[in-house]
Amino acid sequence: MNLENRAIIITGASSGIGEATAKKLAKHGAKVTLMARSEDKLKALKSDIENEGGKALVVPGDVTNKKDFDKVVEKTVSEFGKVDGLINNAGLMPLSFIDKLKTDEWEKMVDVNIKGVLNGVSAVLPEMKKNDNGDIINISSMAAHRYFPGGAVYCATKSAVKMFSEGLRQELAPKYGINVTSIEPGAVATNLTSTITDEDIKEKMSGMLEMETLESEDIANAVYYALSQPKRVNINDVYIVPSEQK
Ligand code: NDP
Image 1 (cartoon, rainbow, N blue to C red):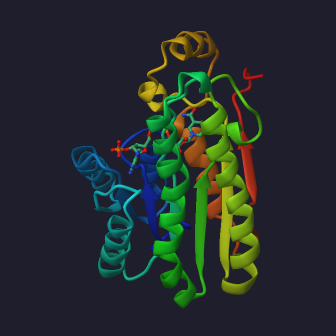
Image 2: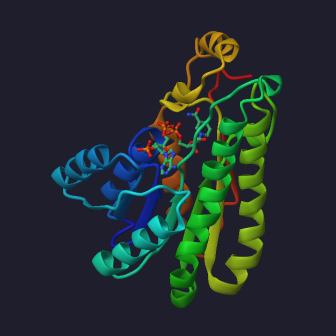
């Protein structure tokens, strides 16, 4: 139980990687704050965690809304006494070819995948600075390493998250004891592709997912690995891909 009593906020906890991470961290003793827009799913997850003897708090919210994030931090502090960690996991991936000009989808990706991460950091930083302690884990992607068809904007958002993580680490870890990790998964079996509206991409994706992908629990294990290190160890990047993915 080496995460005993650590208060950790997880965004995008209502499904996929966020949900698996919340279960994993709670199982190892962390008190988890669950944030996403789907309150019913978060409540069901809280019950699952509590039935296994863990502690969870539900604070529904949208990561693009700074006030929602402030509420998440306030409630975490009032319920658990502090904020020890933030897992910036919420994200979406409506892939499309650039010439389709699906500009609303581009903006949504920038708002959630990049600005959502910035909002999370600005919300938790005062509390972490006060305590001279913290862990921030940002879920970037293999898309930060390489372009794939229809992924120009998505890849750009995940590259931004990866580079922002490195800047955060250099500015925060030596000065405030706040360790920062970027996790970059390849294909994971989740609902992430459900927001794709470009029919040409949908066709391409169906072929790609014939390989054996990662499970959300594999990424939860990587998050746990980064969090469970001694304080002197900062795991910078975890690049984790399915064995079958080229
Ligand atoms: P899911 O679609 O299963 O989960 C996405 C989560 O993000 C949901 O909980 C959703 O909750 C939440 N979310 C979306 N928009 C918002 C918002 N505006 N405010 C708050 N929460 C939001 O996909 P994954 O689990 O796969 O995705 C998690 C992260 O992993 C993403 O950042 C994704 O880019 C990254 N990733 C995924 C890979 C994969 O192959 N699956 C590979 C590499 C990285 P709700 O709708 O309830 O708000």
